[in-house]
Length: 301
Length: 259
Image (cartoon, rainbow over all chains, first blue to last red; front, side):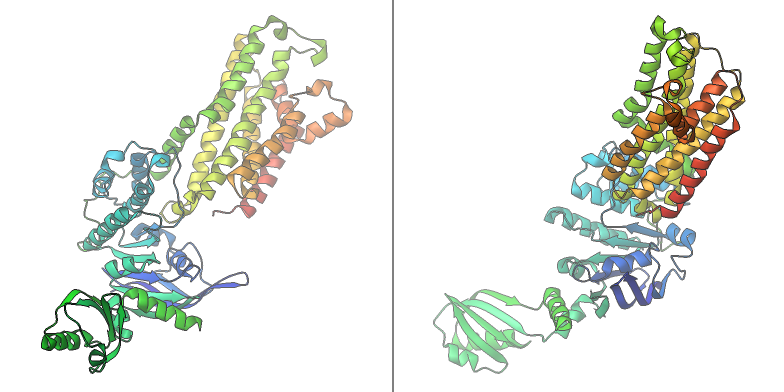
């Protein structure tokens, strides 16, 4: 079942085209990532999905309804955590969650939700006194308190330290296990790789590619880079002459071999025949980072 | 319903969102010490001082035969509404807009206009309550109970409506909390000047008094003063107040930005 459908979305601010032509659809239970550099049109896209902006062209449907027209129906089943949305500095955590719970027909238990998000002991703390990570978690709690079917999370972990980011990722995974469909906006590749079932890479208001993170990386020429320190002297030219090996170079003690997808087995077989051990062997495979950079740089040229 | 909702069971109690908003915002008002001080304590202290100093309770020629207490009572009443509706409210609302609070509310089933409504009710409510306190203190000091109570209430309601509309206009025109604060102060002085805070209306020369008649709080003082003195307020000041309420309210509604 399609939960979010964006078809040929187009949005202009005066002269500036924010979204040129974006289409994607999110299936129920999925974590779908919108990935792209700053000013690529990600936030405008989710604002249209949330019904905060009206598209200039194309169509947006959330659970089959137009979010800009059917505000009541869509807001009741769509939880939104937006960038740069604070709360009243003097508002206490518990008051905030109780207030937002009162907005929805069938809210989650605010106390339990705070516990799940690790804010259970901070109910009496004012928003202004919370750390960045705690604010972010409260923001997620407010987006989830109405027990939405879909949640939009925009730049969720920007500005968080690595530990808080990891905690937040675990939290998102657990939210998905509860059956909530998630539309995640990010510019962290690691976040998309770790969380998303599928991502749409967006640049300059267009979708460059839309697939699972692993499919996006294998689309790249699936080359391998091996680094190791040989246990005995090794003839580099014989190594370079092996099938599928592009280049061999030395960096101090370390040998760097660049080759095709089978380079690892080719090299280890050769080393075994030569009776040489490969110490500190590392294999580098293209990451989503590389795929993303390849996509966005080819779009720019 | 089995697959989609978040695990915790639905809360059985369904509360009324507007009442919750009102309660939370009222608490936040009470937590902002400076707003309580400026709107509530200062005018109350002023009227108490005027009430306990014997000289200010006696009629004086310089105030057109009224005692200073009776002259300043309506002016202080205007001050309360200007402080709450034109100075504090716009700063709070512009700050809410700046911080994305109104935007966040737009994503929930409760539209941000409800927050605006709650804020308006709180600041006007505070204005009415403090004005009643001022009146009670003044009555204890010998000012007669207003015999024109309906006229008094009507005048005060129109003052509330006009100042709220001016406050919303300031909010609509100011992009940020700082600008809202500055604009609020900028309108405070002319509004209070023509209400007679520095030169009571009785001592103004003819052109000044005419301007005062057509200024929102000059008209407000005129209407409230008349009803305190036992006359029905004239139609002119009430119409002036209603005019400001409608005109400023209409422009504010057209120019208001939620983000």
